[in-house]
Amino acid sequence: MATMRPFRALRPPPDRAADVSAVPYDVVSTDEARSLAAGNPLSFLHVSRPEIDLPDGIDPHADAVYELAAKNFARLRREAPLALDPAPTLSIYRLRMGDHVQTGVAGCSSLAEYDADVVRKHERTRRDKEDDRTRHMLGLSAQTGPVFLTYRDRHEVDALVAEAVASAPLADFTAPDGVSHTLWRLTPKSSARLAKAFEAVPLLYIADGHHRAASAARARDARRSANPAHTGAEDYNFFLTVAFPAGQVRILPYNRLVKDLNGRSPDAFRAELARLSPLRDAASGTPARKGDVGVYLGGRWSMFALPAAPAGAAAIESLDAERLQKRVLDPLLGIRDVRTDKRLDFVGGIRGTEALERAVSSGRAAAAFSMFPVSLAELMAVSDANEIMPPKSTWFEPKLRDGLLIHEM
Image (cartoon, rainbow, N blue to C red):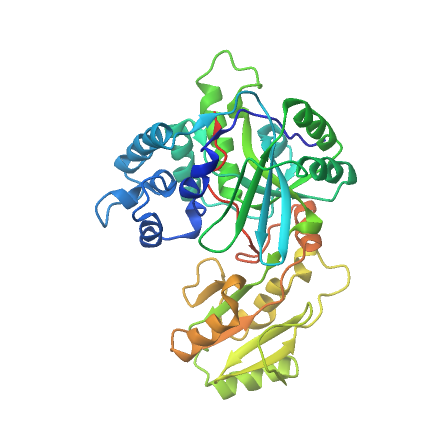
């Protein structure tokens, strides 16, 4: 059973939603965040990345940064202004990017279910990143950006969502990146029906937002330890989520750049790859099927097939990223730890293979590997096996925006 709990969302007025909303805090650098927020005092980046309003070079984890986040949040509440929904409800959040559309249910998921693995994970989190968002949540007494969840499609949920989106939306705008964001606020009665339908969903899976979820659990622990009257029903026991049916979710590849060829020339490295698997000349670097990898080397694309995982191998062993690591990056290039090796870099699939070509042509990288995207079925299999995906395996697009739905805790 999965919980999707109605809550009183704190949100901007519909005519200010576009101005307030911002890209997720963790997909931009400080300089990028500062540029995006320039000239817009309502941008939520002043709350999620408050160092943009402090002198260059400040430690983004300094006390002054978290203090300014709270001040900027209070200012935004006054000036947007942000307002609490009159009653606890669920919302519908639709993303449209070109021809791709996905429609999810926004509400609060249970941290007890997160602990019990009803909400499943596939990624390790870093303690320093958890520290940052935990301090941010506790300083604001709010979760300001949703965790992106997915679940195996349920007809009953789909039918109720379709009924909800037949009405006029509460907010509808297109962000500067071309992604359209549309939100509907359900009535309490409709929210109760949809929450009841979610009780038949056996498992939820974190697609994007592992650090937000882990930080919400730590913030819960802090609040619980400070509350002698704790019951488990308090708002801090739940975390802000948007859950999309798996059939609508799109995963893009996460591609690899290597900065050197471990002492080999491009021709010598190409010959070693060919001994592993025959190389085929390719007009582009986009693999057509699972197991194929494009390599950009010496100014041209080639394609090769990764050796198959052995029969009965663990779910993670069948992933292309894992097979590339074990058959190419480690034995041929000496890249032992993809998490820490500075010779390896990652490029999200949203940037296209042209970004890989530019990196190699400019000399920033010696070779590029273009991957076939992971499927939702593979991600769920890894999560169900309690395994961890290789770093930078999945790029979910389009992304939810911060500041449209805020959960006070």
